[in-house]
Structures are given as structure tokens and as C-alpha cells.
Amino acid sequence: MPRCPRCGGPRILPGRSRITLARDRVICGACCTDEAVRDAQGRAPIPPDRWADA
Image 1 (cartoon, rainbow, N blue to C red):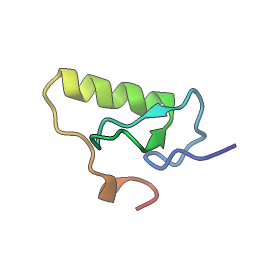
Image 2 (tube, rainbow, N blue to C red):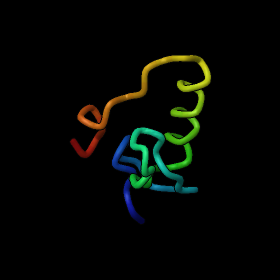
Image 3 (tube, rainbow, N blue to C red):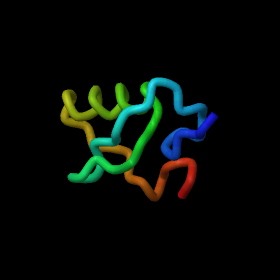
């Protein structure tokens, strides 16, 4: 199973990261939810250089 580049876990229910305008980074569903919640709360996203694959 592919790994999520953001958390390093299995990429279950994949989605696209909000970090880039093109949304070309595929991450797991849990990380997609976390990014959406952070965005809704006005919190800064976790930058890609702090992701598990960085």
C-alpha cells in the first residue's frame, strides 16, 4: 500500500493536499481532513518540509 508523504501512514482514502495551488500531492484521508480543519480554523498548514517524507 502506498504511504502518505505527510504522515508516513498508509494512504487510505487518498485525497489531494491543499498546500499547493495545483493540489498535486496525494495524501491520506486523515491528513486531508486535518488540512481542511486547519484551513477552516484559520490555522497555518503543516509545511511540506515538516512532512514525513521531507
